[in-house]
Amino acid sequence: MTDATQTTPQRTAAAMSGPRGPKPRRRITPSNIMLYSILFVASVYYLLPLYVMVVTSLKGMPEIRLGNVFSPPVEVTFEPWVKAWSEACTGINCDGLSRGFFNSVNILIPSVVLSIAIASVNGYALANWKFKGSEVFFTILIFGAFIPYQVMIYPIVILLREMGQGISAVTGTDFRLMGSLWGLVIVHSIFGMPILTLLFRNYFTSLPDELFKAARVDGVGFWGIYFRIMLPMSLPIFVVAIILQVTGIWNDFLFGVIYTKPDTYPMTVQLNNIVNSVQGVKEYNVNMAATLLTGLVPLVIYFVSGKLFVRGIAAGAVKG
Amino acid sequence: MAVTEGVRPVAERTSAKRPNRLFKNMTAKIASIPMILTALVVFIGCTLWTIYHSFTKSRLLPAPDKWVGWDQYERLWNTRRWLVSIENLAIYGVCSLVLSLVIGFTLAALLDRKIRGEAVFRTIFLYPFALSFIVTGLVWQWILNPQFGIQQVVRNWGWEGFTFDPLNNAEIVIYGILIAGIWQGSGFIMVIMLAGLRGIDQDIWKASRVEGIPAWKTYIFIIIPMMRPIFVTALVLIAAGIIKVYDLVVAQTSGGPGIASEVPAKYVIEKMFQAQNLGQGFAASTMMLVSVLVVLIPWAYLEFGGKRRD
Image (cartoon, rainbow over all chains, first blue to last red; front, side):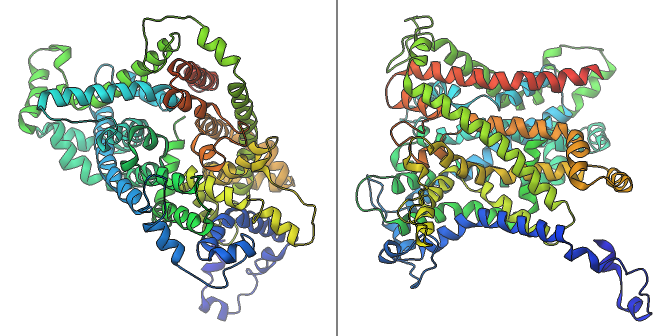
C-alpha cells in the first residue's frame, strides 16, 4: 500500500522500472474483483434504507401510491419535510415534530453536562484517589451496566417521586422529578455512568503519574488537580464522551416514554407516535421525512466526528 | 479549598502513620457520592427491590406485605404471550448472534485485505449504528411494506407470485425484525473485529504465506483462534444488546401481528405501566435478569478466573 505512493516523479524519470514490477498486478486479480463486489453488495444493503428515506420524503403522496419505495422522485417536493416539522399529528396535538425536537434538546444538554461531569470526577477519583472500597463500587457499576433496565425502572419511578416530594417539602414548592425533564436527566446520568466512568478512569490512569505527584507535592488538592491539570489535559476524551452521550441520549426511547409526560416527550417517542398512530390516512412521505429528521442529529455527529465516534464506541468494547 | 486539602496528606505522612481511615481522602469520597449511591441504591438496591416484589401480589401499587411465593412466576410461565416472547427472543438472539459475528467478521476481514477506499466502506457499514432503533424500525417497516416495498418491486420485475411480507406474517415476523436489527448493529461488531485484526502480528501472515497456506485457511485456523478474546467481547456485547430489544419491536411491528413479535422487555413494560399488574412485570423482569446472569457469570468466570490463574 505504502510503496506505491513513495515513488517520486524524479525516481521514475531515472528509469527505475525494476523494483516497481509487481505493483500493477495487484488490483485486477479475480480475488480482488470478488472482494470488491462483496463489499459493494454489502454497501447496497447498508445504504438502501438511507436512500429510501431520502427518496420517499421528497415525493408527493400520489407518486408514492403509483410507484415503489425505490423509485426516485419525479417531482421533488419539500412539503413532507415542512409538514413533518410543524403539522404532523400525534393523536394529542398537531404541531409536528418540532415540539419533540426542542424537548430532546432540552433533555439533551443538561443530561450530557451532568452525566459527563459526574463520570469524569468518578473516573478521576478512581484513577488517582483510590480509597477503601472504591474498586468495589466500580465493579458494581460495571456489572450494573449489564442489568436489564426493566429490572430497575419501576423502583426508580418511586425514588424520583419520593425525591421530588422531599424537595417540594423542603423548598415549599410543587417540584416534581417524576414526569419532568429533571427526572429524566437524573436517569440518563445514572445509566450513562458505568460506561463513562470506565472511559474516564482508563484515560486518567493512562496519564503519567508524575504530573499528579508533582501537583500533590506542590500542595494542590483534589479539585485543584482536577480543574487545573486533569481537565485541560483530557479534552479528547471529553469529546469522545460527548459524542457517545449525545447520540445515546438522543436515540433513547425507553426512558423518554416512561419518565416524561406527553408534552415533554423526546423526539424519538413523538416520532413513533406520529408514524404508528392509527388514525387518519398514512402519509408515508411525511413519516419518512419525520424519521429522517429524527435521525439527522446523530447522523451529522457521526459524519462530522468520524474517527472519534469509532473511538467512543470502541471504548465501550474494551471492557473485558 | 484546594489549599487546605493539599496540606493534610503531607501532615499525615509526618505525624501519625495511620490516622482515622474514614477521613482519609475525604474530598475524593465526597466527590464519589453519586457513584456510590448509583452503585448501592440503584444497581443493587433497586434490583433487590424488584426481585423481592416479584414474590408479592402487587397490582396497581407495590404491595410488599402481600407475599405470594412463586405465584407470579407460575402465572408467567403459563402465559402464552410470555412464552411467545421468550421464543422470539431465542430466535432473534441466536440468529443475530451468529449473523452479527459472521457478517461483522467477514466485513472486517475484507476491509483488512488492504483495499482502496477502506474509510468509505467503513463509514457506510457503521452509520446505521448512529441511528436509533426507532428510526431503524420505522425505515424497515416502510421498506418491507407489502404494497410498496421489496415485495412489490420484485413483482414489478415480472415475478408476480413473489411473496415477502414478513411484518404481516406471524410465522416469520421475527425475521423481519432481525433484518433491521442486523442492519443497525453489525457495523459495530465489524469495528471491534477490525480492531482485533489490526492487532494481529503481521509476521503471522508472512509465515502463512511462506508456508503456502491459503488466506481463508489462515483466517479459520490461525487468526480466529488468536482473536478469541475479541470474539468473547463481541459476544457479550451482542448478548447484552439482545436482551434489551424493545424500541425496535415497538417501532417496527408494535408486537404484531397479534402477539407474534412480542419480546420480554415489552412484556415487562406493558405489565408495569399499562396492565397495572406490577407483580407480573417484576417477575418477568427478574427472569430477564436471570437470563443475563446465565450469560454473564460464565463470561466473568472465564475472564477474571483465567487471569488469576496466570
